[in-house]
Length: 461
Image 1 (cartoon, one colour):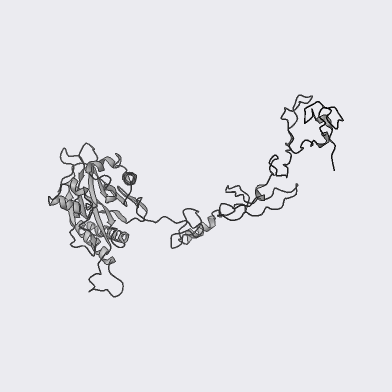
Image 2: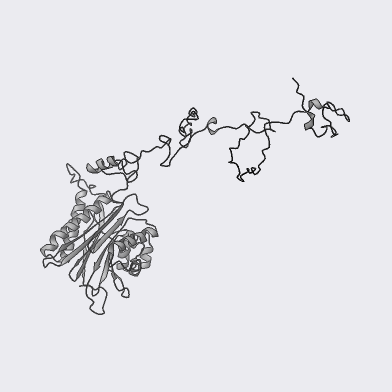
């Protein structure tokens, strides 16, 4: 069926552009059949964007919704592409699952329907049930209270789930931090901090801090730091057992009047026995097996006691004690000597200190606590400081980043004497900032004595 168009809309002949008159069916100049000219398309009207006319009162009428014309269903290149809703197209959500089908449209008077399919609301005010995949219920305070009442651990992530024996939350599956990954303790004037570091998968260090009273009523403060030998089996158990045993031995002997240096020697022996016991197999011990002690649990130990005018240190291995005077104009001192290959080379004169510590064998220890130790030789020393200072007891996880006494003193914050816990935290942070390649443990003991004039900052008793 042909359609006759009104030619008033044609300004001129499509063939020769000759002006046309209303009602012409053919061009008078070239004979063009005007009935074959298509009508102008009606699916793409031009919408004028004009300022609305003002009413008699001078106010503009309220703007109404813009009614955009529907797109053509045709797909030719000279017409717009069809318009689709997002739910008309196949797709998957962020979890890789097909999008849900769109819900049927609700009546106009009904309340707003649920969110369209494929839309996730992670905000607290999103529609109920519209969170899609990975939906996690809000913490239930009643569940947390029940878990706490039964002595269970509560997840650090969702704050509601119970932590199972494997260390994972039963509600959200979040892995919980190990108890020994980071430990802090402050007891009066002594404080200690231990951290797993940035490279190790667990913390194999341990510490114990305590205080007691001597027979005359004066206080005695104790700090023990142990470093598990990573190449041995169960090094974390070895360090914990040694720290606990040494601390308990000192708390038992010091109040009975044992000299602090002798008490330290005996505490190291007690720690050694505790570590040795870890190597004993349950049931029938194979006494005649020559390999029963191979790769036995092992650790190093260093400790300090402040009692009256005495500062006593004891050690086996390469953990250290430094003395940092409160008056930083006085020189700091390192009070221990490592049981290590490097120290042995320096002591025998085969290498100087720089050459020895540059060698890859420098940190190989020659003394430790464990059933496979060759000869246990506890080292102890007693000092009488002549001025107030700070005793730094640490593992190599710290002193690797502040080896010289002057470097350690520079890392110790100026207020560490008054704030030992803060000072220990800063020192652990110093090691982590340096790379944190090892577990880091440090204990700080302020030592208070009245100034007695010039002299060495710390001299042996």
